[in-house]
Image (tube, rainbow, N blue to C red; front, side, top):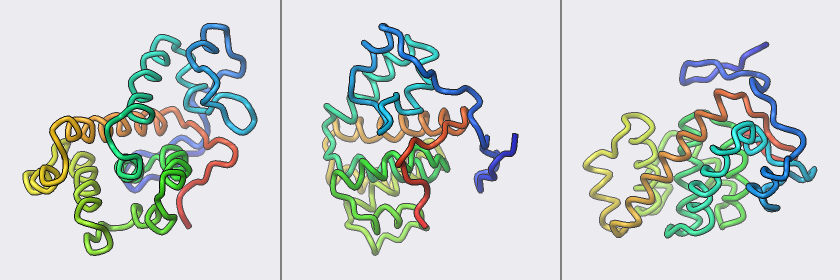
Length: 194
């Protein structure tokens, strides 16, 4: 198996280590519902891979689904955090899926592209810059710095701050899972920006 190089150090598998399931059992159909399918009508590769462990899939859907469907954060800001975490973790699958979601919730392709570049606070609003700095802090040191925390607390309430950090941590975990398992991009999902 050929591995892809990551600038973070560990090579990424070039093919799935665990292939997504192809047929859904009644239990998996109930867990997945109808809203997480690829254009081909099969489960997205992430869910098809996690489906090998239905108990984990069920709880993951509830936990991560909270952030995407019932969270407190504005969707655009949430996607800035997820995309930056995906980039920092070099998870092309995470970045590709959230490129689609990010565009859907108002991020321009130029903004999505900028999330793959060295951080430049001058190209972002103060509020967006704080979110990017938070994602960078957590991915580099597992702690939001005092300077970044001060910026965040100027705009976000305590419950929102908790959710921001949980979103970043959750998608860092997801990125590590996707990278480790070699989950392949779904059809019609973009990779890295050009």
